[in-house]
Length: 138
Image 1: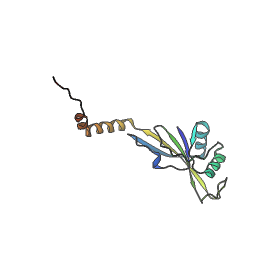
Image 2: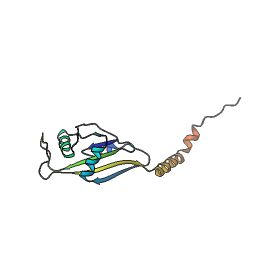
Image 3: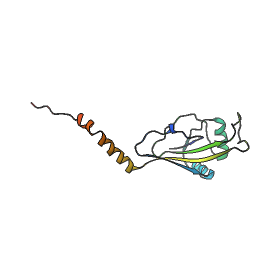
Image 4: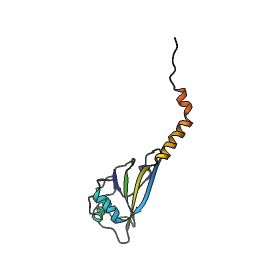
């Protein structure tokens, strides 16, 4: 799933064995192209920011204060605002304010995942033995 947000938080991550979080700066044009050619869900939490982003990107960015947890293969475009606090009801960036653009990708390193699973089994091998069903003899 593709998302757009005005921030990124560690709370957006769920624990996945072997998970890798790739954080890459991208250009405005790359963000715009990605959002104009891909189905996405907005999780921009401020209505004024959503309106400004809609204008800048030339696509519909709705305000949606939903909390998400990114899953395997999800991508998040982050429009990170830098500048003075936005005045209430503003529809344009104030002078000197900018957005930096980031792409967050959630991937899994299969080798790392396999090694983690083997380590877990090794550390917990006695749990498996203790819970092994026993046969009753007549």
